[in-house]
Length: 234
Image (cartoon, rainbow, N blue to C red; front, top):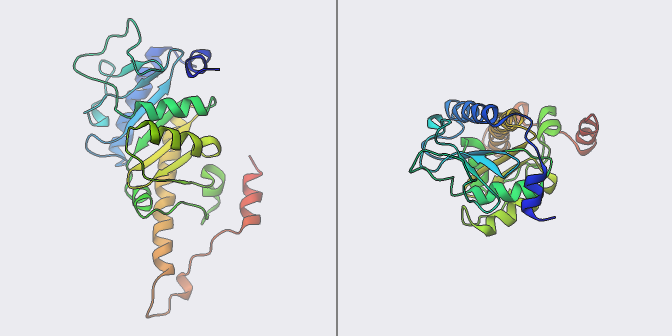
């Protein structure tokens, strides 16, 4: 099955007007939550023809129904779709396209630059240990994707491979990607990822403290058996 076939085969669960409104709401929420600042970050939702995706050059709280782009599997504007000029789809649309191709169960993708998760990515530190049950249950292992040029086909290939068994990715020296069955799930995963990343970052700092007794503040990570038992609840 080709990428085009994969995208066309899936029907959206909401009419496009509903998808547009939801995309705008979630975009604003990501920005106002401090999960991406400036004009960084991009968000998409799958459609029968391809995807609705936020435009390049705007802050996420500026995304509106008349500047959202609708592109097909080749990144071309879908016939009959009117987008207010001069807005173009995010330059990282190819990353979203690769994820939809690799994960037919994925219907929404958020790329953001939340502070602590991006800091771990810049330190080349995956989240491969769990400090609370919610991390193991909702996130699982969060792999690190090696640094590759943003928006490139090479990065698209890397994230597609990494996402075969992960819903959250850390992009080295770049940011984060989260996948969801819908925009709501993707947003909640992004929120939780940033919370867990902050915990992991601070826990690792505590582990490295020297010069005074920190034994009472030493983080206790969940063991493999505990993680497996939590994940078996799904």
